[in-house]
Length: 287
Length: 280
Image (cartoon, rainbow over all chains, first blue to last red; front, side, top):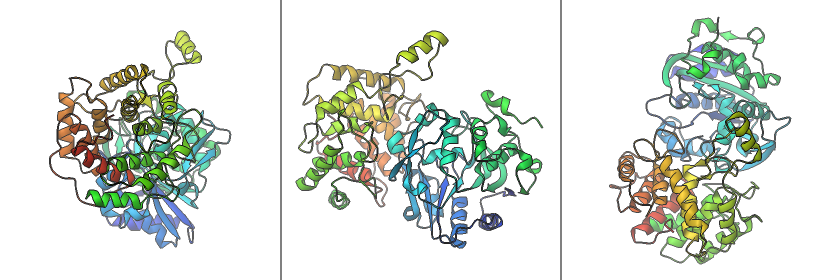
């Protein structure tokens, strides 16, 4: 688990991301890597999606480490015009050859995957073959509060893989079947993971779409999505023990701060209490 | 440009007769749009259309509905879209069975358990919105499947008279009116911001539904002015044209992004000369 300061989306991000991937000894030589950013929708005013420069930095880092194939896979949750949203968000201009390496998770070929001992009402779910077939799934979420889930980070970001062509837009079926439970179930499907959280410019308040920009100035990375999310929560001033999808995923990840090996900045040095909506004030971290 | 689009559409047909969204295997939605576009095109492309129609026909389930692809088993929202092919040469499937599915199975209604829950606890786990159409059975209604299903029912009513159709279309339009954004236009559901694609599709579905759309028409024209998405602009073009309005200017240049965009371009071109594929 690494916490790194990053004050802006600039060229230094490339070196930072490469260093963190090397530090974590992520072995991708000869392997297939899928990068999953959060491109839920585009908004010119609010940082609701992962910045394309971070996505490009991750792409370059995994290529430099010898990955055989690196793809970007995302299925916007709100609207079906995926490539148009990606263009608005700057993905085409910042990531060379974007359209060739991008797979729309909303319309990719799918496989029905059973949930083993599911927490949610789903017994199975269709998921895109690109994500199911990779050797390493890299979750690149935007650090945000979420009006239904409390926070949306590396684990909740997996929702974007669920195909809209099957379940529609927005992907509310997942929310109905238990938002926390479904995230925990998805988390169990994808075991070979890494996470790099975009917390440079983040979103607080009425997220994930209508919140307010907040400059958090951090990148958080690690292989255990639950541990990464728990650490992000603490940075945001949120108690991860109060976030249902994190506690449900305890069998596949770590929440306890004492058991999470951490490098880089101390949480207290980068902590900034994110604004929470009235429904979520109870999750405020007390210390 | 129409000729190029048509060639691109024909070239992208899969070996099994269907169309993918852009690459890969065939899916129901892009295949239906491709068949609508071929039906609207000037030239005859009967072989390609028939192969597409046959692919679609093989997907129809015993309950009358269509799944989203051969991989996904359950009947879903694309059944309402398929009804837009009713009565056309390319409709080789059982459109009456599809219509029945849309009229009876496409929407979530509270069952015994939900009614009991309301009685005991004063609330239901799900929001009851029985009058639009959902993406998947037994879930809430949304603007896009509701709009497309209204259009499909209008089309099927031309070939199969059924007294339930105008009633359900009326309910669907009530749903759309109730979910209009404050400043006009539509999001996917209750969102505050209107989207081009949903606003265009809903305007098509509200064609002939009476007055009260002035604000939304103004919103659609405003959205079109700033819309960089070709598909979004196409939906607005189709929706505004249904109400006698034109979208000024031309779409941004650039490569076409997938089958739906290609097909909608052909459908919009045909609409300009009076051949309406989406309006009944």
